[in-house]
Length: 337
Length: 236
Image (cartoon, one colour):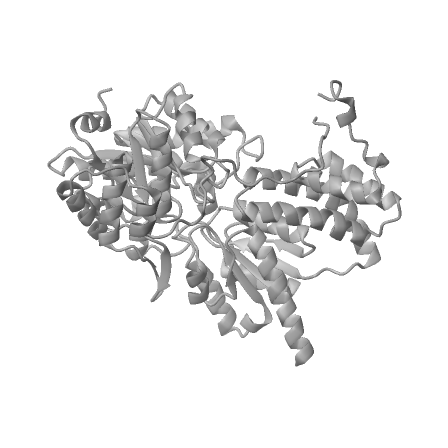
Protein backbone atom coordinates (compact mmCIF):
# COMPACT_ATOMS: atom_id res chain seq x y z
CA UNK A 1 0.00 0.00 0.00
CA UNK A 2 2.60 2.51 -1.01
CA UNK A 3 0.27 4.77 -2.91
CA UNK A 4 0.30 8.47 -2.14
CA UNK A 5 -3.18 8.46 -0.61
CA UNK A 6 -2.48 5.59 1.79
CA UNK A 7 0.73 7.30 2.85
CA UNK A 8 -1.09 10.52 3.68
CA UNK A 9 -3.86 8.65 5.46
CA UNK A 10 -1.26 6.88 7.58
CA UNK A 11 0.24 10.21 8.64
CA UNK A 12 -2.83 12.32 9.23
CA UNK A 13 -6.18 12.08 11.01
CA UNK A 14 -8.08 13.85 8.25
CA UNK A 15 -7.38 15.02 4.71
CA UNK A 16 -8.98 17.92 2.91
CA UNK A 17 -10.24 17.08 -0.57
CA UNK A 18 -11.25 19.65 -3.17
CA UNK A 19 -14.47 21.44 -4.08
CA UNK A 20 -16.50 21.91 -7.22
CA UNK A 21 -15.21 21.24 -10.71
CA UNK A 22 -18.30 21.87 -12.85
CA UNK A 23 -19.42 25.04 -11.07
CA UNK A 24 -15.89 26.45 -11.08
CA UNK A 25 -15.35 25.81 -14.80
CA UNK A 26 -18.72 27.30 -15.47
CA UNK A 27 -17.66 30.49 -13.75
CA UNK A 28 -14.52 30.45 -15.93
CA UNK A 29 -16.67 30.62 -19.02
CA UNK A 30 -17.67 27.06 -19.82
CA UNK A 31 -20.94 27.31 -21.69
CA UNK A 32 -24.00 25.23 -21.00
CA UNK A 33 -23.85 22.00 -22.94
CA UNK A 34 -20.12 22.08 -23.54
CA UNK A 35 -18.11 19.04 -22.36
CA UNK A 36 -15.76 20.24 -19.58
CA UNK A 37 -13.29 17.49 -20.45
CA UNK A 38 -12.56 19.05 -23.85
CA UNK A 39 -10.97 21.93 -21.95
CA UNK A 40 -8.13 19.61 -20.94
CA UNK A 41 -6.92 20.18 -24.49
CA UNK A 42 -8.38 23.53 -25.50
CA UNK A 43 -8.03 25.45 -22.19
CA UNK A 44 -5.33 23.69 -20.16
CA UNK A 45 -4.43 26.86 -18.27
CA UNK A 46 -7.96 27.12 -16.89
CA UNK A 47 -7.82 23.52 -15.68
CA UNK A 48 -4.48 24.19 -13.99
CA UNK A 49 -6.08 27.26 -12.38
CA UNK A 50 -8.94 25.10 -11.14
CA UNK A 51 -6.53 22.70 -9.45
CA UNK A 52 -4.29 25.46 -8.14
CA UNK A 53 -7.32 27.05 -6.54
CA UNK A 54 -7.88 23.90 -4.49
CA UNK A 55 -4.20 23.33 -3.69
CA UNK A 56 -3.64 26.95 -2.63
CA UNK A 57 -6.70 26.72 -0.38
CA UNK A 58 -5.14 23.76 1.42
CA UNK A 59 -6.55 20.68 -0.31
CA UNK A 60 -4.53 17.50 0.18
CA UNK A 61 -6.38 15.75 -2.61
CA UNK A 62 -7.97 17.07 -5.77
CA UNK A 63 -9.98 15.42 -8.51
CA UNK A 64 -9.02 15.63 -12.17
CA UNK A 65 -11.26 17.14 -14.86
CA UNK A 66 -12.37 13.77 -16.18
CA UNK A 67 -15.78 13.23 -14.60
CA UNK A 68 -17.44 12.76 -17.97
CA UNK A 69 -14.39 11.42 -19.83
CA UNK A 70 -15.93 8.09 -20.69
CA UNK A 71 -17.05 6.82 -24.07
CA UNK A 72 -20.73 6.66 -23.07
CA UNK A 73 -20.84 10.34 -22.27
CA UNK A 74 -18.34 11.72 -24.74
CA UNK A 75 -20.23 10.20 -27.65
CA UNK A 76 -22.71 13.02 -27.39
CA UNK A 77 -19.95 15.48 -28.14
CA UNK A 78 -18.75 13.33 -31.01
CA UNK A 79 -15.73 12.38 -28.93
CA UNK A 80 -16.50 8.79 -27.90
CA UNK A 81 -13.08 7.70 -29.09
CA UNK A 82 -11.29 10.36 -27.03
CA UNK A 83 -12.00 8.98 -23.55
CA UNK A 84 -8.52 7.63 -22.95
CA UNK A 85 -6.67 10.64 -24.39
CA UNK A 86 -8.79 13.21 -22.53
CA UNK A 87 -8.43 11.23 -19.29
CA UNK A 88 -4.66 11.03 -19.77
CA UNK A 89 -4.49 14.78 -20.38
CA UNK A 90 -6.66 15.41 -17.30
CA UNK A 91 -4.26 13.43 -15.11
CA UNK A 92 -1.20 15.09 -16.65
CA UNK A 93 -2.54 18.56 -15.86
CA UNK A 94 -3.31 17.46 -12.32
CA UNK A 95 0.14 15.92 -11.95
CA UNK A 96 1.82 19.19 -13.00
CA UNK A 97 -0.03 21.19 -10.37
CA UNK A 98 0.41 18.60 -7.60
CA UNK A 99 4.14 18.23 -8.29
CA UNK A 100 4.57 21.99 -8.06
CA UNK A 101 2.70 22.27 -4.75
CA UNK A 102 5.74 21.92 -2.51
CA UNK A 103 3.95 19.39 -0.27
CA UNK A 104 2.36 16.02 -0.90
CA UNK A 105 -0.89 16.45 -2.84
CA UNK A 106 -2.81 13.47 -4.17
CA UNK A 107 -4.02 13.52 -7.78
CA UNK A 108 -7.30 11.62 -7.81
CA UNK A 109 -8.49 10.60 -11.27
CA UNK A 110 -12.20 11.41 -11.34
CA UNK A 111 -14.42 8.73 -12.85
CA UNK A 112 -18.09 9.67 -13.14
CA UNK A 113 -21.07 7.53 -14.09
CA UNK A 114 -21.76 6.40 -17.63
CA UNK A 115 -25.21 7.96 -17.48
CA UNK A 116 -26.77 4.69 -18.54
CA UNK A 117 -28.59 2.03 -16.57
CA UNK A 118 -26.78 -1.27 -16.30
CA UNK A 119 -28.26 -4.70 -16.86
CA UNK A 120 -30.42 -6.36 -15.66
CA UNK A 121 -32.80 -3.40 -15.35
CA UNK A 122 -31.11 -1.29 -18.02
CA UNK A 123 -29.50 -1.84 -21.41
CA UNK A 124 -25.79 -1.42 -20.57
CA UNK A 125 -24.14 -4.86 -20.28
CA UNK A 126 -21.70 -5.38 -17.42
CA UNK A 127 -18.82 -6.29 -19.74
CA UNK A 128 -19.30 -3.13 -21.80
CA UNK A 129 -19.46 -0.98 -18.67
CA UNK A 130 -16.19 -2.50 -17.46
CA UNK A 131 -14.64 -1.75 -20.85
CA UNK A 132 -15.83 1.87 -20.74
CA UNK A 133 -14.44 2.40 -17.23
CA UNK A 134 -11.19 0.62 -18.07
CA UNK A 135 -10.51 2.96 -20.96
CA UNK A 136 -10.91 6.00 -18.72
CA UNK A 137 -8.88 4.36 -15.94
CA UNK A 138 -6.08 3.50 -18.35
CA UNK A 139 -5.82 7.11 -19.50
CA UNK A 140 -5.81 8.41 -15.92
CA UNK A 141 -3.10 5.94 -14.96
CA UNK A 142 -0.98 6.87 -17.98
CA UNK A 143 -1.33 10.55 -17.12
CA UNK A 144 0.00 9.96 -13.63
CA UNK A 145 -3.02 9.86 -11.31
CA UNK A 146 -2.15 8.56 -7.83
CA UNK A 147 -5.52 7.02 -7.24
CA UNK A 148 -8.77 6.62 -9.17
CA UNK A 149 -11.85 8.27 -7.76
CA UNK A 150 -15.27 6.91 -8.67
CA UNK A 151 -18.01 9.42 -7.82
CA UNK A 152 -21.71 10.26 -8.07
CA UNK A 153 -22.69 6.64 -8.59
CA UNK A 154 -26.22 5.48 -7.82
CA UNK A 155 -26.35 1.80 -8.85
CA UNK A 156 -24.45 -1.06 -7.17
CA UNK A 157 -23.99 -2.71 -10.59
CA UNK A 158 -22.16 0.34 -11.90
CA UNK A 159 -20.02 0.56 -8.75
CA UNK A 160 -18.99 -3.08 -9.19
CA UNK A 161 -18.24 -2.66 -12.90
CA UNK A 162 -15.94 0.28 -12.18
CA UNK A 163 -14.17 -1.64 -9.38
CA UNK A 164 -13.53 -4.48 -11.80
CA UNK A 165 -12.08 -2.08 -14.36
CA UNK A 166 -9.80 -0.56 -11.71
CA UNK A 167 -8.56 -4.04 -10.77
CA UNK A 168 -7.80 -4.67 -14.44
CA UNK A 169 -5.49 -1.65 -14.53
CA UNK A 170 -4.12 -2.41 -11.03
CA UNK A 171 -4.88 1.01 -9.57
CA UNK A 172 -5.88 1.89 -6.01
CA UNK A 173 -9.20 3.67 -5.86
CA UNK A 174 -11.85 5.42 -3.82
CA UNK A 175 -15.58 5.37 -4.49
CA UNK A 176 -18.55 7.49 -3.51
CA UNK A 177 -22.24 7.40 -4.25
CA UNK A 178 -24.83 10.20 -4.30
CA UNK A 179 -27.57 9.74 -1.74
CA UNK A 180 -30.08 12.18 -3.17
CA UNK A 181 -33.44 10.40 -2.91
CA UNK A 182 -34.94 10.17 0.57
CA UNK A 183 -31.50 9.46 2.00
CA UNK A 184 -30.79 6.74 -0.55
CA UNK A 185 -29.31 6.81 -4.01
CA UNK A 186 -31.78 7.13 -6.85
CA UNK A 187 -31.51 3.36 -7.23
CA UNK A 188 -32.50 2.84 -3.60
CA UNK A 189 -29.04 2.10 -2.11
CA UNK A 190 -28.70 3.12 1.56
CA UNK A 191 -25.47 4.23 3.21
CA UNK A 192 -25.34 0.90 5.05
CA UNK A 193 -25.80 -0.93 1.73
CA UNK A 194 -22.74 0.83 0.30
CA UNK A 195 -20.74 0.01 3.44
CA UNK A 196 -21.53 -3.67 2.92
CA UNK A 197 -21.01 -3.53 -0.85
CA UNK A 198 -17.42 -2.26 -0.66
CA UNK A 199 -16.43 -5.13 1.61
CA UNK A 200 -17.68 -7.69 -0.91
CA UNK A 201 -15.35 -6.44 -3.64
CA UNK A 202 -12.14 -8.39 -4.39
CA UNK A 203 -10.33 -5.04 -4.64
CA UNK A 204 -12.06 -2.86 -2.04
CA UNK A 205 -11.51 0.91 -2.26
CA UNK A 206 -8.97 2.70 -0.05
CA UNK A 207 -11.85 4.86 1.14
CA UNK A 208 -15.55 5.16 0.38
CA UNK A 209 -18.36 7.54 1.09
CA UNK A 210 -20.84 10.06 -0.25
CA UNK A 211 -20.65 13.01 -2.62
CA UNK A 212 -23.02 15.60 -4.07
CA UNK A 213 -26.63 14.70 -3.32
CA UNK A 214 -28.89 17.08 -1.46
CA UNK A 215 -27.17 19.58 0.80
CA UNK A 216 -24.69 19.23 3.65
CA UNK A 217 -27.11 17.88 6.28
CA UNK A 218 -28.18 14.88 4.22
CA UNK A 219 -24.58 14.11 3.40
CA UNK A 220 -23.63 13.98 7.07
CA UNK A 221 -26.55 11.68 7.79
CA UNK A 222 -25.04 9.31 5.22
CA UNK A 223 -21.65 9.59 6.96
CA UNK A 224 -23.30 8.64 10.25
CA UNK A 225 -24.81 5.66 8.45
CA UNK A 226 -21.39 4.52 7.21
CA UNK A 227 -19.86 4.98 10.65
CA UNK A 228 -22.69 3.06 12.35
CA UNK A 229 -21.87 0.06 10.20
CA UNK A 230 -18.59 -0.18 12.14
CA UNK A 231 -16.42 0.06 9.03
CA UNK A 232 -12.66 0.36 9.49
CA UNK A 233 -12.31 1.82 6.03
CA UNK A 234 -11.73 5.60 5.77
CA UNK A 235 -14.97 7.47 5.04
CA UNK A 236 -15.26 10.24 2.44
CA UNK A 237 -17.60 13.24 2.80
CA UNK A 238 -17.92 15.50 -0.22
CA UNK A 239 -21.09 17.53 0.08
CA UNK A 240 -22.52 20.42 -1.92
CA UNK A 241 -22.23 23.97 -0.64
CA UNK A 242 -25.95 24.39 -0.11
CA UNK A 243 -28.39 24.34 -2.97
CA UNK A 244 -28.11 25.98 -6.41
CA UNK A 245 -29.74 29.29 -7.17
CA UNK A 246 -29.83 31.11 -10.46
CA UNK A 247 -28.60 34.67 -10.21
CA UNK A 248 -27.40 37.03 -12.90
CA UNK A 249 -27.18 34.29 -15.50
CA UNK A 250 -25.03 32.15 -13.24
CA UNK A 251 -25.55 29.25 -10.91
CA UNK A 252 -24.68 30.10 -7.33
CA UNK A 253 -24.86 27.75 -4.38
CA UNK A 254 -26.20 29.31 -1.22
CA UNK A 255 -23.91 27.61 1.32
CA UNK A 256 -21.51 30.11 2.89
CA UNK A 257 -17.87 29.38 3.75
CA UNK A 258 -18.86 29.54 7.45
CA UNK A 259 -21.51 26.86 6.89
CA UNK A 260 -19.08 24.62 5.04
CA UNK A 261 -16.57 25.08 7.88
CA UNK A 262 -19.19 23.79 10.33
CA UNK A 263 -19.98 20.98 7.91
CA UNK A 264 -16.31 19.97 7.67
CA UNK A 265 -15.85 19.80 11.44
CA UNK A 266 -19.08 17.86 11.89
CA UNK A 267 -18.08 15.49 9.07
CA UNK A 268 -14.83 14.77 10.90
CA UNK A 269 -16.64 14.29 14.21
CA UNK A 270 -19.13 11.99 12.47
CA UNK A 271 -16.26 9.76 11.40
CA UNK A 272 -15.14 11.00 7.97
CA UNK A 273 -11.40 11.12 7.31
CA UNK A 274 -11.46 12.59 3.80
CA UNK A 275 -13.50 15.77 3.76
CA UNK A 276 -14.21 18.03 0.83
CA UNK A 277 -16.98 19.76 -1.03
CA UNK A 278 -18.82 19.13 -4.24
CA UNK A 279 -20.97 21.46 -6.37
CA UNK A 280 -20.70 25.10 -5.34
CA UNK A 281 -17.63 24.65 -3.14
CA UNK A 282 -15.07 27.34 -4.05
CA UNK A 283 -11.50 27.84 -2.79
CA UNK A 284 -12.93 30.34 -0.32
CA UNK A 285 -15.08 27.58 1.17
CA UNK A 286 -12.12 25.20 1.22
CA UNK A 287 -9.96 27.73 3.06
CA UNK A 288 -12.63 28.11 5.75
CA UNK A 289 -12.95 24.33 5.99
CA UNK A 290 -9.21 23.85 6.39
CA UNK A 291 -8.96 26.55 9.04
CA UNK A 292 -11.85 25.04 10.99
CA UNK A 293 -10.45 21.51 10.81
CA UNK A 294 -7.10 22.74 12.06
CA UNK A 295 -8.36 25.03 14.81
CA UNK A 296 -11.43 23.36 16.24
CA UNK A 297 -10.87 20.39 18.56
CA UNK A 298 -12.45 17.04 17.82
CA UNK A 299 -15.87 16.68 19.40
CA UNK A 300 -18.47 13.99 19.98
CA UNK A 301 -20.26 12.43 17.04
CA UNK A 302 -22.98 14.94 16.08
CA UNK A 303 -26.60 13.91 16.51
CA UNK A 304 -29.13 14.30 13.70
CA UNK A 305 -30.73 17.11 15.71
CA UNK A 306 -27.45 19.02 15.94
CA UNK A 307 -26.73 18.52 12.23
CA UNK A 308 -30.17 19.84 11.26
CA UNK A 309 -29.86 22.67 13.77
CA UNK A 310 -26.48 23.80 12.43
CA UNK A 311 -26.66 23.06 8.71
CA UNK A 312 -30.39 23.04 7.97
CA UNK A 313 -33.20 20.51 7.72
CA UNK A 314 -32.87 17.12 6.03
CA UNK A 315 -34.55 16.68 2.66
CA UNK A 316 -36.46 13.64 3.92
CA UNK A 317 -37.55 12.31 7.28
CA UNK A 318 -35.87 8.92 6.87
CA UNK A 319 -32.84 7.55 5.09
CA UNK A 320 -33.81 3.90 4.78
CA UNK A 321 -31.94 2.80 7.91
CA UNK A 322 -33.35 1.74 11.26
CA UNK A 323 -36.97 0.78 11.62
CA UNK A 324 -38.91 -0.33 8.59
CA UNK A 325 -40.55 2.36 6.57
CA UNK A 326 -44.17 2.31 5.52
CA UNK A 327 -45.15 -0.71 3.47
CA UNK A 328 -48.06 -1.18 1.15
CA UNK A 329 -50.95 -3.50 1.98
CA UNK A 330 -51.29 -6.12 -0.72
CA UNK A 331 -53.90 -8.48 -1.93
CA UNK A 332 -51.87 -11.50 -0.90
CA UNK A 333 -49.99 -14.30 -2.59
CA UNK A 334 -48.79 -14.20 -6.14
CA UNK A 335 -47.09 -16.69 -8.32
CA UNK A 336 -43.55 -15.68 -9.09
CA UNK A 337 -41.74 -16.52 -12.29
CA UNK B 1 -42.95 -21.96 -4.70
CA UNK B 2 -46.19 -22.44 -6.59
CA UNK B 3 -45.99 -26.22 -6.12
CA UNK B 4 -45.66 -25.83 -2.38
CA UNK B 5 -48.51 -23.38 -1.98
CA UNK B 6 -51.17 -24.28 -4.49
CA UNK B 7 -53.64 -21.85 -2.87
CA UNK B 8 -51.21 -19.02 -3.69
CA UNK B 9 -51.66 -19.65 -7.37
CA UNK B 10 -53.78 -16.87 -8.83
CA UNK B 11 -55.68 -17.48 -12.04
CA UNK B 12 -56.43 -14.00 -13.37
CA UNK B 13 -59.38 -15.16 -15.48
CA UNK B 14 -61.11 -16.55 -12.40
CA UNK B 15 -61.15 -13.19 -10.62
CA UNK B 16 -64.14 -10.89 -10.92
CA UNK B 17 -63.57 -7.44 -12.42
CA UNK B 18 -62.92 -5.65 -9.15
CA UNK B 19 -60.54 -8.34 -7.89
CA UNK B 20 -58.75 -8.44 -11.20
CA UNK B 21 -58.15 -4.68 -11.20
CA UNK B 22 -56.86 -4.93 -7.62
CA UNK B 23 -54.56 -7.76 -8.67
CA UNK B 24 -53.35 -5.71 -11.64
CA UNK B 25 -52.44 -2.91 -9.23
CA UNK B 26 -50.26 -5.42 -7.35
CA UNK B 27 -48.80 -6.82 -10.55
CA UNK B 28 -47.96 -3.36 -11.87
CA UNK B 29 -46.34 -2.59 -8.53
CA UNK B 30 -44.26 -5.74 -8.89
CA UNK B 31 -43.40 -5.05 -12.53
CA UNK B 32 -45.00 -8.23 -13.87
CA UNK B 33 -45.38 -7.45 -17.55
CA UNK B 34 -46.90 -10.71 -18.81
CA UNK B 35 -49.51 -10.69 -16.07
CA UNK B 36 -50.46 -7.10 -16.93
CA UNK B 37 -50.79 -7.99 -20.60
CA UNK B 38 -52.97 -10.93 -19.66
CA UNK B 39 -55.09 -8.76 -17.37
CA UNK B 40 -55.61 -6.16 -20.11
CA UNK B 41 -56.71 -8.85 -22.57
CA UNK B 42 -59.15 -10.36 -20.08
CA UNK B 43 -60.76 -6.99 -19.36
CA UNK B 44 -61.06 -6.26 -23.09
CA UNK B 45 -62.60 -9.72 -23.63
CA UNK B 46 -65.11 -8.94 -20.92
CA UNK B 47 -66.21 -5.96 -22.95
CA UNK B 48 -64.41 -3.13 -21.15
CA UNK B 49 -63.78 -0.18 -23.48
CA UNK B 50 -60.02 0.33 -23.99
CA UNK B 51 -60.18 3.76 -22.36
CA UNK B 52 -61.67 2.25 -19.20
CA UNK B 53 -58.93 -0.40 -19.05
CA UNK B 54 -56.34 2.34 -19.40
CA UNK B 55 -57.73 4.66 -16.76
CA UNK B 56 -59.04 2.22 -14.16
CA UNK B 57 -56.45 -0.55 -14.31
CA UNK B 58 -53.21 0.93 -15.66
CA UNK B 59 -53.42 4.60 -14.67
CA UNK B 60 -54.88 3.58 -11.32
CA UNK B 61 -52.03 1.16 -10.69
CA UNK B 62 -49.32 3.55 -11.81
CA UNK B 63 -50.76 6.19 -9.47
CA UNK B 64 -49.91 3.93 -6.52
CA UNK B 65 -46.42 3.34 -7.93
CA UNK B 66 -45.99 7.10 -8.37
CA UNK B 67 -47.10 7.87 -4.84
CA UNK B 68 -44.73 5.33 -3.31
CA UNK B 69 -41.92 6.66 -5.50
CA UNK B 70 -42.69 10.18 -4.33
CA UNK B 71 -42.72 9.00 -0.71
CA UNK B 72 -39.38 7.20 -0.91
CA UNK B 73 -40.84 3.69 -0.62
CA UNK B 74 -40.04 2.66 -4.20
CA UNK B 75 -36.91 3.67 -6.10
CA UNK B 76 -35.90 3.89 -9.73
CA UNK B 77 -35.37 0.15 -10.40
CA UNK B 78 -38.85 -0.78 -9.17
CA UNK B 79 -40.44 2.12 -11.04
CA UNK B 80 -38.68 1.12 -14.26
CA UNK B 81 -40.00 -2.41 -13.90
CA UNK B 82 -43.51 -1.12 -13.19
CA UNK B 83 -43.34 1.22 -16.17
CA UNK B 84 -42.14 -1.65 -18.34
CA UNK B 85 -45.16 -3.70 -17.29
CA UNK B 86 -47.43 -0.76 -18.00
CA UNK B 87 -45.91 -0.34 -21.45
CA UNK B 88 -46.77 -3.98 -22.16
CA UNK B 89 -50.40 -3.21 -21.42
CA UNK B 90 -50.27 0.08 -23.31
CA UNK B 91 -48.96 -1.64 -26.42
CA UNK B 92 -52.18 -3.64 -26.57
CA UNK B 93 -54.40 -0.63 -25.82
CA UNK B 94 -52.77 2.02 -28.01
CA UNK B 95 -54.11 0.88 -31.40
CA UNK B 96 -57.54 0.33 -29.87
CA UNK B 97 -57.53 3.75 -28.25
CA UNK B 98 -56.63 5.33 -31.57
CA UNK B 99 -59.51 3.47 -33.31
CA UNK B 100 -62.05 4.52 -30.72
CA UNK B 101 -60.83 8.12 -30.68
CA UNK B 102 -60.45 8.08 -26.91
CA UNK B 103 -59.54 11.39 -25.33
CA UNK B 104 -56.05 12.15 -24.05
CA UNK B 105 -55.73 14.51 -21.15
CA UNK B 106 -52.86 16.39 -22.73
CA UNK B 107 -49.80 16.27 -24.91
CA UNK B 108 -46.23 16.72 -23.76
CA UNK B 109 -42.94 17.21 -25.58
CA UNK B 110 -40.04 16.24 -23.35
CA UNK B 111 -36.27 16.08 -23.67
CA UNK B 112 -32.96 16.40 -21.83
CA UNK B 113 -31.19 19.67 -22.64
CA UNK B 114 -28.13 20.20 -24.78
CA UNK B 115 -24.91 18.81 -23.33
CA UNK B 116 -26.71 16.42 -21.02
CA UNK B 117 -27.01 12.76 -21.80
CA UNK B 118 -28.76 11.80 -18.59
CA UNK B 119 -32.16 10.45 -19.35
CA UNK B 120 -33.09 8.22 -16.44
CA UNK B 121 -35.25 10.84 -14.73
CA UNK B 122 -36.63 12.10 -18.01
CA UNK B 123 -37.61 8.56 -19.03
CA UNK B 124 -39.36 8.08 -15.72
CA UNK B 125 -41.35 11.27 -16.23
CA UNK B 126 -42.16 10.19 -19.76
CA UNK B 127 -43.41 6.79 -18.59
CA UNK B 128 -45.37 8.14 -15.65
CA UNK B 129 -47.01 10.78 -17.86
CA UNK B 130 -48.04 8.08 -20.30
CA UNK B 131 -49.18 6.04 -17.36
CA UNK B 132 -51.38 8.96 -16.34
CA UNK B 133 -52.94 9.14 -19.82
CA UNK B 134 -50.88 11.87 -21.46
CA UNK B 135 -49.55 11.61 -24.99
CA UNK B 136 -45.77 12.01 -24.77
CA UNK B 137 -43.33 12.89 -27.53
CA UNK B 138 -39.87 12.09 -26.21
CA UNK B 139 -37.02 13.94 -27.92
CA UNK B 140 -34.34 12.00 -26.06
CA UNK B 141 -31.09 13.52 -24.85
CA UNK B 142 -28.91 16.47 -25.84
CA UNK B 143 -31.56 18.77 -27.30
CA UNK B 144 -30.60 22.16 -28.66
CA UNK B 145 -33.17 24.96 -28.57
CA UNK B 146 -33.91 24.37 -32.27
CA UNK B 147 -34.96 20.78 -31.56
CA UNK B 148 -37.42 21.87 -28.88
CA UNK B 149 -38.86 24.60 -31.11
CA UNK B 150 -39.25 22.28 -34.09
CA UNK B 151 -41.05 19.70 -31.96
CA UNK B 152 -43.36 22.33 -30.49
CA UNK B 153 -44.14 23.64 -33.97
CA UNK B 154 -44.91 20.14 -35.25
CA UNK B 155 -46.72 18.72 -32.24
CA UNK B 156 -48.40 21.75 -30.64
CA UNK B 157 -48.06 20.24 -27.16
CA UNK B 158 -49.78 21.51 -24.04
CA UNK B 159 -46.61 20.98 -22.07
CA UNK B 160 -42.87 21.23 -22.66
CA UNK B 161 -40.73 19.23 -20.23
CA UNK B 162 -37.00 19.84 -19.89
CA UNK B 163 -34.56 17.82 -17.83
CA UNK B 164 -30.94 18.41 -16.77
CA UNK B 165 -28.80 16.47 -14.35
CA UNK B 166 -25.69 18.61 -14.32
CA UNK B 167 -24.95 22.04 -12.90
CA UNK B 168 -23.24 22.72 -16.22
CA UNK B 169 -26.33 21.97 -18.31
CA UNK B 170 -29.18 23.31 -16.21
CA UNK B 171 -28.77 26.94 -17.33
CA UNK B 172 -29.53 25.83 -20.88
CA UNK B 173 -33.16 25.58 -19.83
CA UNK B 174 -33.17 29.34 -19.60
CA UNK B 175 -31.80 29.61 -23.12
CA UNK B 176 -34.78 27.61 -24.37
CA UNK B 177 -37.33 29.58 -22.35
CA UNK B 178 -35.80 32.93 -23.39
CA UNK B 179 -35.99 31.88 -27.03
CA UNK B 180 -39.64 30.90 -26.58
CA UNK B 181 -40.33 34.33 -25.10
CA UNK B 182 -38.46 36.09 -27.89
CA UNK B 183 -40.48 34.24 -30.51
CA UNK B 184 -43.76 34.86 -28.72
CA UNK B 185 -44.32 31.17 -28.03
CA UNK B 186 -43.93 31.09 -24.29
CA UNK B 187 -47.59 31.68 -23.39
CA UNK B 188 -48.82 28.83 -25.60
CA UNK B 189 -47.09 26.12 -23.62
CA UNK B 190 -46.77 25.05 -20.00
CA UNK B 191 -43.07 24.62 -19.21
CA UNK B 192 -42.07 22.06 -16.57
CA UNK B 193 -38.45 21.51 -15.55
CA UNK B 194 -36.74 18.87 -13.46
CA UNK B 195 -33.46 17.18 -12.62
CA UNK B 196 -31.35 16.43 -9.58
CA UNK B 197 -29.56 19.78 -9.13
CA UNK B 198 -32.68 21.91 -9.67
CA UNK B 199 -35.06 23.36 -7.13
CA UNK B 200 -38.19 25.47 -7.02
CA UNK B 201 -36.37 28.79 -6.89
CA UNK B 202 -34.31 27.85 -9.92
CA UNK B 203 -37.44 26.94 -11.86
CA UNK B 204 -38.97 30.29 -11.00
CA UNK B 205 -35.77 32.23 -11.78
CA UNK B 206 -35.51 30.86 -15.30
CA UNK B 207 -39.21 31.45 -16.01
CA UNK B 208 -40.60 27.92 -16.00
CA UNK B 209 -44.18 27.31 -14.87
CA UNK B 210 -43.02 24.77 -12.32
CA UNK B 211 -40.13 22.69 -11.06
CA UNK B 212 -41.06 19.07 -10.48
CA UNK B 213 -39.09 17.18 -7.87
CA UNK B 214 -39.80 13.76 -9.36
CA UNK B 215 -41.92 11.95 -11.90
CA UNK B 216 -44.90 11.62 -9.59
CA UNK B 217 -44.89 15.35 -8.87
CA UNK B 218 -44.55 16.03 -12.61
CA UNK B 219 -47.78 14.14 -13.25
CA UNK B 220 -49.63 15.93 -10.45
CA UNK B 221 -48.33 19.32 -11.58
CA UNK B 222 -49.13 18.68 -15.23
CA UNK B 223 -52.70 17.73 -14.38
CA UNK B 224 -53.17 20.74 -12.13
CA UNK B 225 -51.77 23.24 -14.63
CA UNK B 226 -53.78 21.79 -17.51
CA UNK B 227 -56.96 21.96 -15.43
CA UNK B 228 -56.19 25.57 -14.52
CA UNK B 229 -55.65 26.42 -18.17
CA UNK B 230 -58.95 24.82 -19.17
CA UNK B 231 -60.74 26.72 -16.43
CA UNK B 232 -59.18 29.95 -17.58
CA UNK B 233 -60.15 29.24 -21.18
CA UNK B 234 -63.71 28.46 -20.09
CA UNK B 235 -63.91 31.62 -18.01
CA UNK B 236 -62.39 33.77 -20.76
